[in-house]
Length: 69
Length: 245
Image (tube, rainbow over all chains, first blue to last red; front, side):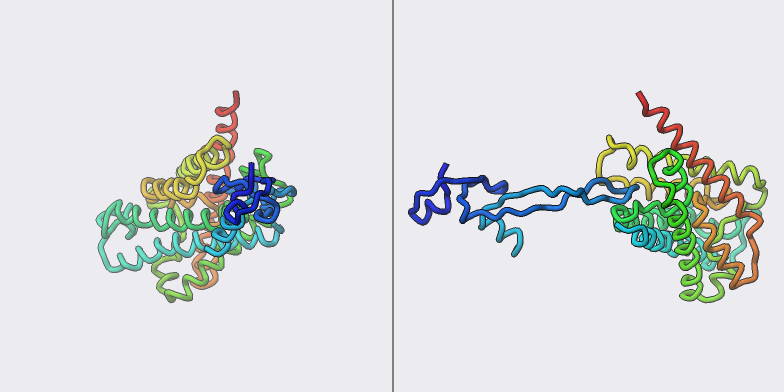
């Protein structure tokens, strides 16, 4: 699979990941990898943040929508 | 989350329950002041709207409890009730070291609510409304009151077990269903012994009435310790037995 965003720029780059939101293939330059907190439990017990975080990869357009609205 | 923050969340949640819930009972008595209740079993709650008075009080509790559970449930668990805390501890779901601080916070929150309610409304809230304190109604014996509180809290705790503690329960419904359950119990059995279901909910108004109005109801307090704790314990163990393969 090729990077969709590079293809729009007339470049031919192999994709290294898939955006979990829109599903496009993206290269290292066009992805954002975040580690998201994972919480367990809740009423009637206090919710606990797990030690390990969940990795999440988004393409840059989806990332900007999530964080800028 | 630190124990201090969780205890503070319990304090705030129990404050909201007593301020709005017990406060609604006090306001109902103040509104009914001057009316002539039709019989001795009617002390004023019911003088204006019959069972509708109790429904209104039940809904005030229901909304305050639902709001507290949705707002604070992830922080402390929003027990808001020493009987619930003790039942969760007895069934090995809650650490023993946290039981004391949780109960202390619930009692302080309830007491603060009663004093601040009196501060907002004035001394009529104490002298007429009794700060919404619970006590056996005329003709109800001590033992009957304990039994009514135990049965009411049994239903409350059984609901908590089924709707919230059980991992198979559908998510998101606990606050609404548990709030409405308390509202329903108050509507149907409030005129027996007040349907406190909660030692902290009775403690706050008792302390406020005692300090602000020199009116001691402490002789009835064991009803609201023994009944709710017994009902909650029985419900938790019965649910565990019923849900085990």
